[in-house]
Length: 257
Ligand SMILES: Cc1cc2nc3c(=O)[nH]c(=O)nc-3n(C[C@H](O)[C@H](O)[C@H](O)COP(=O)(O)O)c2cc1C
Image (spheres, rainbow, N blue to C red):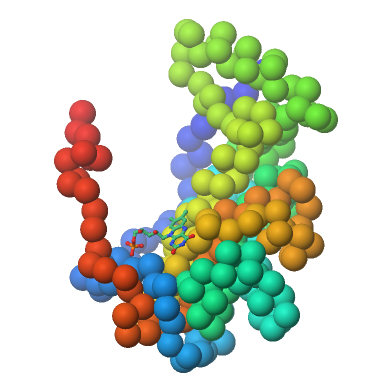
């Protein structure tokens, strides 16, 4: 592993001014509180501009190294949609939904997107050296697992050894690590999409109760692609939410140190 510093502060002159505009916390919490997983939808269609706005919101989700290793497949073809419903085990949340989206993680595409990032920097010009360095040196170091994962045992051993004396980023390691890595960012896009739908007055249901191999075949996806979730969307029908929201006591999950 090289001695490149991973998170160097950007020189002051290169920092962008990004003012924090005022926001509406009450509106945000109203969206969060009214989002429910909907299992039965009404027939109301979702306007195309709403779908576009929500897809756009999904792609603004925070994501690891901004490599955007995700895809969203909006399935509209009637035959494919029927097959997708079947692959979702014919759940009512899929079968009654006017729209179906498949959120896919693409850890296999990190290198392509890394190249796109460098090209975008070239086009933009005036990009700080540190940013170039991050995508030229750091990301290959962190995400390249080598052909057939040959780097994995070395990464694991070096990480363990170096990590004994100082803090180091330990993940992702190996093919499975890369899968988790891509799922994390794609899941954030899922959450952002579902909240955006709610903000527009529509509803969603995330589904992992599906046959991912069949979903991938249906969409023509390669072996390395990961189906993070299928998300159905539409307007909730009366009785479409199965019960009041229930969560365990927050004290179980929130730990203050
Ligand atoms: C990763 C994931 C997978 C899920 N899979 C399904 C599913 O296959 N079918 C379903 O009806 N609901 C599914 N759900 C919805 C959960 O059951 C639901 O989020 C949970 O019961 C909490 O309810 P709420 O979303 O209304 O707050 C899934 C949720 C997540 C996050």
